[in-house]
Image (cartoon, rainbow, N blue to C red):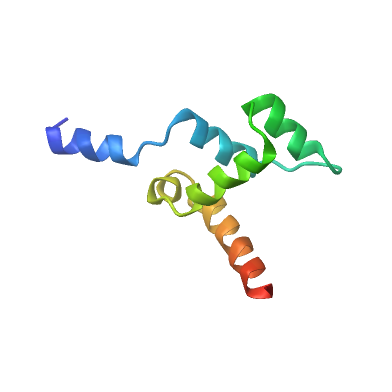
Length: 85
């Protein structure tokens, strides 16, 4: 791989935590509190911090390249909530 190719690869790679956040968002959760419990137990994050990281991730082009279906779905949900305000 060329130097330019290696730079592009590093810029498009998400870290493990970012990948784990997107993976958690792909899952379905039954019942209230199940998602928050998974956030705490699997990622070791407080739900508030998780959602801060998730919102920043939705604006990251690397996340879009990694998982376009999930990122676009979450962007639509976010925009719908903003429109309601």
